[in-house]
Amino acid sequence: MFDNFNLNAIWESGGILISIVGYIIVFFALLLLYMIFALMQKVLVSRQRKKLKMQGHRAADSPEINLSGEVTSAISMALHLHFAEVHDFENTILTIKKVQRPYSPWSSKLYGLRQTPRK
Amino acid sequence: MEGIHQFLEFTGFANVTLGHLGMITVGLLFIYLAIAKEYEPLLLVPIGFGILLGNVPFIENVGLQLGIYEEGSVLNYLYFGVTKGIYPPLIFLGIGAMTDFSTLLSNPKLILLGAAAQVGIFITFITALTLGFDINQAASIGIIGGADGPTAIFLSSKLAPELIGAIAIAAYSYMALVPVIQPPIIKLLTNSEERRIKMKPPRAVSKLERIMFPIVGLLLTTFISPGALPLLGMLFFGNLLKESGVTKRLAETANRALIDIVTILLGITVGASTQATTFLTPQSILIFVLGAISFMIATAGGVIFAKVMNLFLKDENKLNPMIGAAGVSAVPDSARVVQHLGLKEDPSNYLLMHAMAPNVAGVIGSAVAAGILMGFLLKVF
Image 1 (tube, chains in turn green, orange):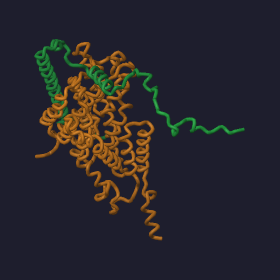
Image 2 (cartoon, chains in turn cyan, yellow):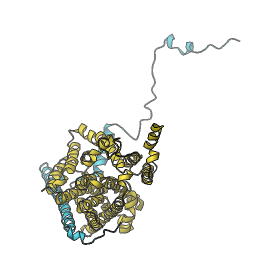
Image 3 (tube, helix red, strand yellow):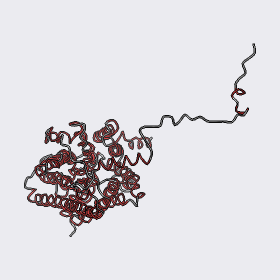
Image 4 (cartoon, chains in turn orange, purple):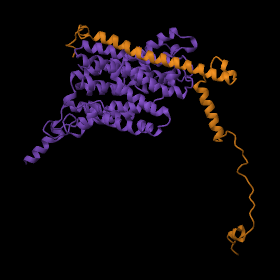
């Protein structure tokens, strides 16, 4: 299986050059992507700060203007529970209500019962 | 009597070889791993069954048009999508439509881990050259280290179509075996203290950033590496369908029905391409060995680079070096492995979201690497 082992092949075929240049290009492409989006993040934050400052919010001067994903999820969950009216504490007398019904022989309990047999 | 004799000669029993039986055993093993151990069942069930399908023995090349390598057979038509590299971009479309790049955008430096892990591709490329593979074959074998089945199939369909079966099987097998291969390497390269590092929670990402990412990402990566256009084009297109918020139906079709259909076709045909009479060669076994090495180097590359990055980062921004291992792509399995290892060390340390960032960056990185190798090696002039 290893009969064809030939260390010189990497030089003769230019493989070593392709590997080094190829890896550098992959790294460069993703580094560029990183730099663009890191820059975009900074631009968006400074735009947000300006907007908040114009509206007179104190948050404009706070060092961390972005909410973490965890905080956003917690707020979203709380809003969802509020609007969907899902609450932890239920009103326990909700189900017991006195209902007034006018008398009618059709719904009379007395007529509905089986008569006890005469002995 | 002659008819009976001919019928008997046509049966699988008359044509079976040890190779067929060996491959059927491999197919059964894949199905067992998928069902009993739940190792990547969506891949291993179609591939495992495909192996069974491709290794039912019959008389070849007498015009029966049954086997995957016989022109005009149904399986051959379906295999066309593999050999011409049609399925991989469609899979990428679905992956793009289901991938959330938010964690990557919230901490863009994690993109670099996806680049670092691609070292496996290039080291294996050199190793394969020294073992006697020609330069195109070596590049196709190296890409297994990208741990991305569709990318491996796409590149080998362009550079070394004769190795496509072995490369596809190796890539998908190692992707399914991520939970077995990666943990020992991660543990070897990190200590318990490093594995317990808690990372800063990711920030919420604006819709504008999420829409800009596929557009900027496409233009930037494909201008550098146009060879990756079919893969990255579809990946970013799928992601724009998802993030735009106005093409929900298209995004849902891409990330459900379409990707499921293509996965079925790809899995079954790649499995069937392992027909023992064509597939079982010493070369295929060597490809398997090289694929494993490639995968291990890629994992180690990601982890080591995360440790190097930590040397330059402030304490509050330190990375858990385990997430570097997710840079090999294999979405989302390698991120899941990191999450499990993190929870084992500290049950309150959730690393999944952080690991997803290098994981999706790895998908982009391996596609860029494939495009670069095509750019170097495809003979167009």
